[in-house]
Figure 1 (cartoon, rainbow, N blue to C red):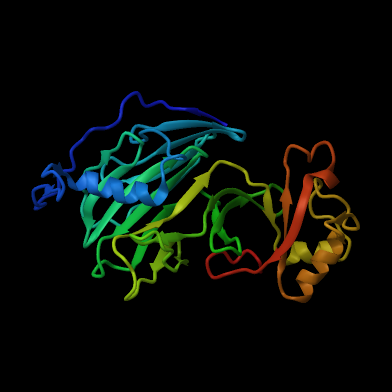
Figure 2 (cartoon, rainbow, N blue to C red):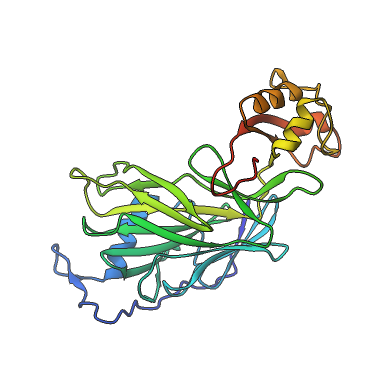
Amino acid sequence: MKLKNSVHAAMLTTALIAGTAAPAIAASGGSAVSAADRVTATVQKATGTADVAPDSTRGTVMATDRGLVTVTTPASADGRVTVAASDGSAVTMTLPAAVGAAGTTSAAGTTVYPDAAAHTDLATQATVGGGARALVTLKDAKAPTTQRFNLGLPEGASLVADGNGGYDIVTSAGGAGLVARGHIDAPWAKDAKGNSVPTRYSLEGNTLVQTIETGADTAFPVVADPHYTWGIISGTVYFNKKETKVLALGGTVVGWLPHPAAVVGGRSLAGIAGYAVATDQCIKFKVNPALAPLSPAAAVAGSGTYKGSAGDGYCR
């Protein structure tokens, strides 16, 4: 994968927040350490910088094996993170900001928004795989442990729980099923000692809600991270209950699938679909789109089952 950066210089804007105190004085050597430097150090300690793309506040274009993806992170905390595919479609995400704190971008590409909410710093990173991180730093035990990120989805797109704590962002596969064109990774959170802090997602409409379970032993600050991609087809295709039942009975729902009697991973597609029907689930396939025109059987790399949820409802 090659990285094409359309940005020629890092954004050096100073974070200007009404009422912000003067920069702290470092304990060692007496040198001034700005709020932006403090947040950057905390975030980059948690994430590392190996997969962080250069400054994306003016757009970073990445050439992936599925086409060009452009990531733009907001110049202020009240803006939206945008990940756009080569066809012009995009998925956006708001930050849980209370004020429009101006961003400062580090040499490594992390844009930080100090004190953008009560007891909370925010940050964004474009990632070289064609995605974006929205990072929340809980500065102390008074910081809210529930954070909300509103998602802007293209027309016809929806979210399907992936079974691992994250979500696939899906659109119509054409004819039948839904194909994943983006993904929200399972959440993570780390405290100041590098220990994992329990965290989980839920959905309120198109709002991604992250809950972070801090406790008496949590070392602050805590960094938590929603990370998502768009425009990179993962190959996961979801079918609903009606389509699953057709497959279980030996029928065909879409031309690129092999015959239901075909064996995938030691089991026939019809058998897997039959199990899904019997357990009130739906079937999903992992597909290599490049192989589909050559051999439908080779195109199906794996299969499994999934259940609907309040957030997606496709398995119905």
